[in-house]
Image (cartoon, rainbow, N blue to C red; front, side, top):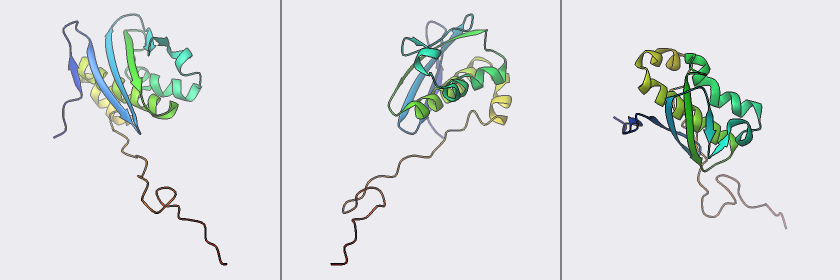
Length: 138
């Protein structure tokens, strides 16, 4: 079985880890009024893209806890898509730990499933994972 990716710390924060592509997000949930902080910035500042913002909010909207919890996220690696996906998974895992009843709606919405798609490694003798050298007839 995989290592546990959600815990409770001494300050009664519910902690979840999310990963997507090369991004890793460490998420803390605590009772509050719906404030979301990502790398010490607001959600709107950090993710100006609506799609990335909706991605992060999906687990909170699904469980109806948008205005009940404060979310603090530390995310690094990858780009905006990977980071928003990592935040989404981390928040969903922390919500599951906070309220075990919410696991079923989160699972039904596909929010607890890790997206395993990763970039294929570059191979020697090639320009990328699969792109070969340019062919020259003469």
